[in-house]
Amino acid sequence: QVQLVESGGGLVQAGGSLRLSCAASGRTVRSYTMGWFRQAPGKEREYVAAIIWSGGSTYFADFVEGRFTISRDNAENTVYLQMNSLKPEDTAVYYCAAGRYITGYYGRKDDYTYWGQGTQVTVSS
Image 1: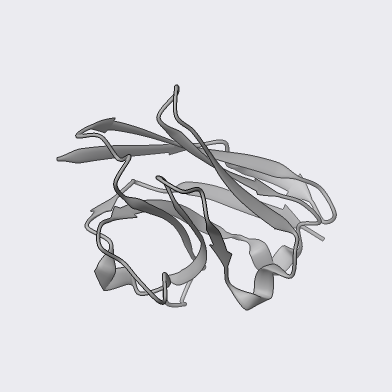
Image 2: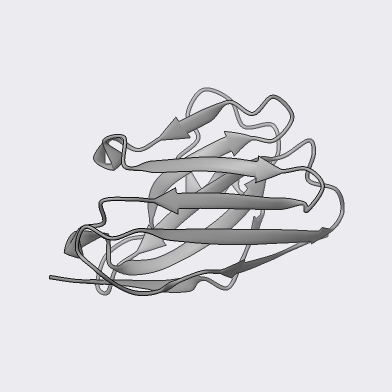
């Protein structure tokens, strides 16, 4: 089992920045792909970014447009999502997820086995 706990959400003005953290515990996640998803009210949960823990390769949804970065800290067993140039449409609950044996496309929710409880991000205009 893997437990994931997100933190770092909050209220920020448009153009501002936030860094989300996802602390993993339990089974080691060194062989996992870690993803960030988000869900706005009344919308489907959508893919934001992913990182392959072992090699560090990163992937992003098209709407990110270079504004976000994803990284991991081996010592802290934590994944980060640095979000810059935030827009009101980035307002959502952000979820961290972990999955194994994911290849090709990293945005399928069903490929992720473990999920955190989410952290709210609100961007005011």
